[in-house]
Image (cartoon, rainbow, N blue to C red):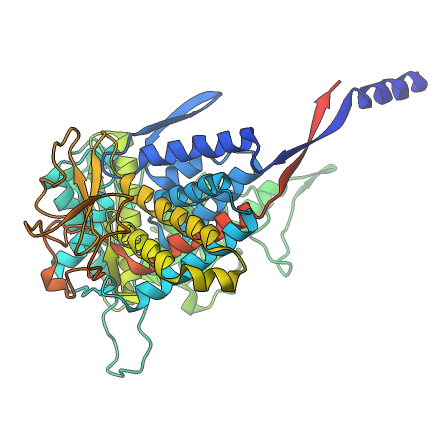
Amino acid sequence: MEGKSVSSRLSAKHEWTSQISVQPLDDCKVRGLIRTLKDLVHSSLGPNGRLKFFQTSYGGHVTVTSTSSKILHSLSGLSHPILRLITSAVRGHLDAYSDGGLRTALLLLSLIQSSLDLPVPRALVAQINQHSLEVMTNHLQSCRWKMRIDIGHMKSMLSVVNSIVGTKPACHLNESEKNYISVLIIKAFLQSLPSKSTKDPSAPVAAPQPVQIVTCEGDPVNESKIIQGVLLQAPDIATFQGNKTLVSRVTKVALYNVSMAGDTDEWFSDSIKTETASVGHDVNIASAVLQQTLKVADWLLAVGVEMIACQKCVHPVLKQYLRDKGAFVVDRVSIVHISAVQRLTGAAILSTFTIDIPESSFGKVEMIEHTVLNDKSYIHLLPHSSLTSSSMCTLLLCSPDETSLNELKTVCQASISVLHETIACPYMVPGAGCLDTHLASFLRQYGKNSGSEVAAELGCTKGQFVAAINNVAHCMESLAMSLEHDGGSHVTDSANQHHWSLSPGALELKPSMPHCMCGLVSCDQSLEWSMMEHVENLRGHKHSCCTDVAEEVFENTVLDICSMKMNSYRTAFETANVILRIHCVVCSSVADN
């Protein structure tokens, strides 16, 4: 019998063999994957981008979006190493700046795809790409296209927010709703800024508080508002009780981030001995753990704690015991909101169930209220005026359906993150493809004027250098033209090299729009026009942006954060160069014989 079992296992083992596949980078399958991902990203870009429906092969929830963060999340199952490297690089950019993910991905993919078609060695192409990045970076540090922004200037801040909110069609916002949400985002951002608590000018500036966002499905967008304090869902409080004050006095708070359900021993440190009751050979550990938690609960009540908040579950017996003693218990706060409660109360997050808790670990709230929003119960925690969290607020977002609400939340999170970035780096650049168009023109002119010198330094011919740098310029222009999805054409003006759009079927080479795509340049009869990709012969390159100060910003100007834009370029170029240096992709797999 034993021999049969061994034989069975051996035969099963030999049914599977390991296979190794080798794919060159320019293999048609790899190119096809890159082209497919590029088409997906390209069609999602801009205010007229096409929405994408994502669903797993097993069915389930459908995600409707055109935002890069959700697209990348839906593509997290990609298995090809090249695609995983690309999505990982874009995700890293989004983690740092929360904006520009689609543009980063599109430029990255365009550089890879077009570089593979060049009759130039890939290692040399990567070297010239890196040189192009350095040229663009140095140019932007000294030219007028980099503008300082005043966060106290409302139009400038609206331009920054509208550049994000106005590009996501899944939010389903009309013009008035878009303006309303943009103003609301700016108000929430301004309230998150800490007040200056010291007169010492050398004291470090405190970081802005993150803005808590709560969604409410079913109500119209104009019902969105800013609420002081923190809102937490409270499904165990009946909605028919209506809005009322639950606790009207200053309350001491204990905050835990581990389960209080008695199903784990992570509460107890090694120095705590848990008494157990034995019945025969069985030990009722769960009962002993519950008894210990009740003892600690008594100690919390004895030191004046009147509110206990837990990130996870609280045992029903413990919860009822505390409530019978007059304490207010909130459980299932979740990892999303526990940090907000910690900032609001000033409490330290406790990870063990012990009675050796210093007084400084407890926090406090001014008041606790019950609020009903769209037939759902919420606990409203109001901060104590003595804490630095007194300016903390919650942005309540409303939208008629789940899809637009989720998209709106993502957009607002990105907008607030970008506004926070303006504090550290208050510099902007023209958006909507105008900067990309200008840099493409600048690179072509640079290649024409300095091609021989740079080619000698890089050890290549002038033809190879010009071909590679013109390819980079073409990718930059493709990035600008990707905002058009309905067959329109693209032109640039002779004076500023800004990006202008022609309607489909236009009969003359003159845009009908009053301003360029970014809104910084007005249409002038004296301007000369040239089709995109034919700007290298333009005369009178002034490389001007036509504005220096925030007061000259128009109402609908589209601006991007300079640091975000430069990191987007850097991520795209450096990742593309890494991939271009890959000779082949080696994968192992297990196949059934």
